[in-house]
Length: 139
Image 1 (cartoon, rainbow, N blue to C red):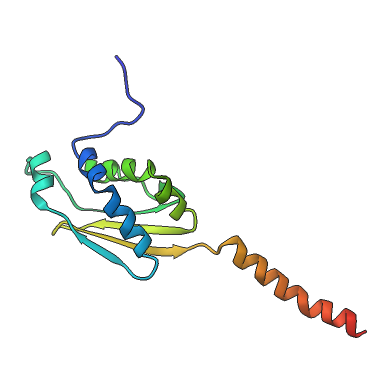
Image 2: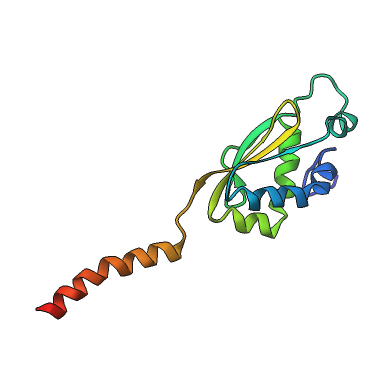
């Protein structure tokens, strides 16, 4: 039996369709939390079972979820689509993104934590070295 390396469910094509929207929300989340109203029928048409949970919350950093959702097929397919995007992975190198699909099918994207970039830390190092250099020139 052959197993594909990328295991997805019925929700993968839906998330792939919305990938440009997801990336736009991630870019715009730099200023403030973003929200996008998804269509309930798109989810329920794909998996009409009554016991399925569509909502999820997850945080991702450096292209990987901080806590992997084990039961949510919706979230697992969301992660699979995000991980395939070079732009999303680039954005997640400098920040932890929080994603939430609530019970009203609103997709919320926000930055929960930002990592200091190397340029910022090198500027701080230069500033801390400057007073020492001034002392040695004054002496």
